Amino acid sequence: MLKHSLSVMMSAAVILYPTLCREIRMKKYSIIVVVVVLIGTIGGYLFYKRTPEVSYKTAKIERGTIVSTVAATGNLSAVTTVQVGTQVSGTIQKIFVDFNSRVKKGQAIAEIDPSLFNASVEQAQGNYLSAEANVQKAKVALADAERTFTRNKKMIVDGIISQGDFDVAETALQSSKALLKAAEGAVAQARGSLMQAKTNLRYSTIRSPVDGVVISRAIDVGQTVAASFQTPTLFTIAQDLTKMQIEVSVDEADISRIKLQQKTSFTVDSYPEQTFRGNVVQIRSAPIITQNVVTYVVVVTVGNSDMKLKPGMTANVLIEVAKKDDVLKLPPIALRFKPKSKGSETKEKSAGTTTQRPPGGGAPGSQGKGGPSKGKDRSQQVYLLKEGKAVASPIKTGIANNISIELVESDLKEGDEVIIEQTGGDTKKKAGASSSPMGPRF
Image (tube, rainbow, N blue to C red):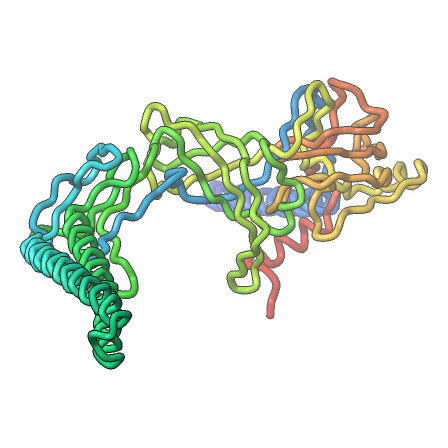
């Protein structure tokens, strides 16, 4: 019995042993998982609550040339453009030139049907000849009246004729003189009509008033033109396309910095890879007001010997208003940088300086819509990286453009590195940004 009981117990133990082992292993795994999760949670909490490491991006101060410019746009046109019209009405019979035709001064470019004008000349010529014949008749009548008056004058002295007959002869003489004057006046009038008819006939042939190139033709053969109160424009002739000009609109905030003979550079859409040069030759005082925006016209002349530029092209112009060589240059982003870490703020306070930024948040001396402005305030500052911390350095700036600002007064030198960007050190800002990625609520 005892042996049987022992064998039964052994059999039971063999059967239950794997189950017990599995339970022990499950408890061990559960404990390990709990411990791992706990450690991960604590580590994540500590990692989240830690202060982010601060790092800075810097840029070097360089020495070189700064060119300050004013940007404007305008359209190209010929320096001298003549609009050719007609002084007589009629039907276009012939056209001798077309677009881009080169013409000389006095060259015929079109002709109006001259039939009516030829008829007017013939009629005026006839009237003139008739008036001259009337003058001859008046002269003959005057000569006869003078002879009669002379004869009667002798006869009245001898008492042969009466005083009445003498008065009649004298009256006839005076009347003949008046008729001669009238006939001469009619001749002058007929001569004027003849000249007018010939002039109209001459105007029926339209001629170029200048040497140049035809850039516009507004008529065709068979078209009727009427010269009334306003002469119609038939052709537009550019006198010299090798010299052109640009009329650019400059904002009122920048017009005070534009001077005569300032150098300019510009590009056109047709040749974006090529830069053309010009000079300021005229600054017009008449304002142009468009939607309460005041601009002034500045005329820039350019050479066009290769004939690439054409009238009407849009030019993006940069007017050089200031230039300095061999000066220290600072990137504008350095003036907009402001440290966020407490360490840099403490260092800044110890230096006794405060960060002051110009109105509008822009960098002092930076170029805006109308160009750069000079910074005269010594409270402008940039930050240097010293011992891993941002340290303020006061500066004074001069002229500027979009990529660099002149350092007028500072303790900096060529090769020094200024901070332009900071990463880390601002946990509150990062947390706020991560909590509302879609921006502020309204």
